[in-house]
Length: 196
Image (cartoon, rainbow, N blue to C red; front, side):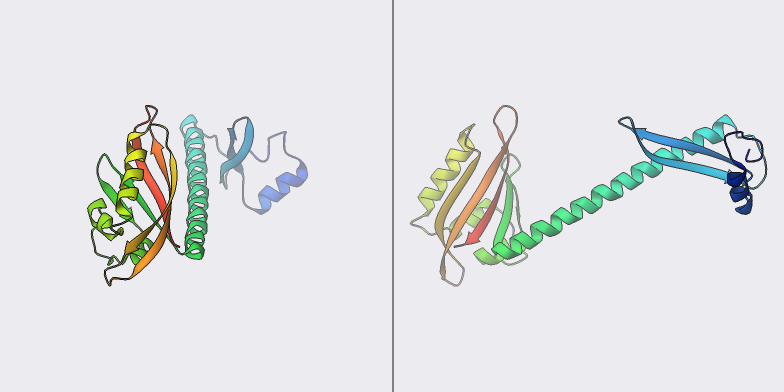
């Protein structure tokens, strides 16, 4: 109650009255021992806030904070994606991922362009391997086999030739990383291929 609460000064009471606030309730949010936010509700007439109303204010405060945190995380993710996009554009590199257990492959547009794949061509290892030059294919396959069968080889760098659909030969530098589970099994391969 703005008029009777002893924690308020006369100046604060006048400010609340000027804003037509006769009563208010507030909830402070603490995360890891730090005050991160305060949330409140007010009314233009004196009243007693019920336990249910106070709990509602606390719940809305928590949900509002969660929404703010989610928005911040989404903004940070967008910023990371933008930096990655700019870095990929600057490098003229194409990125790809492969989940061997499900044989799921994803190629970005730059990868498709580098190898001469159309936007609607299916992304599969079987479609990619014939683009590797015949003379370089055994080395590429040996390296791939080493990464897939080893439990410790987590990265690679390899330079090889490719043959585009129009017959043009180009050199590619491929750099990548293997993500493994705790037992060393491959979860995903991720790479960046550069026109060398």
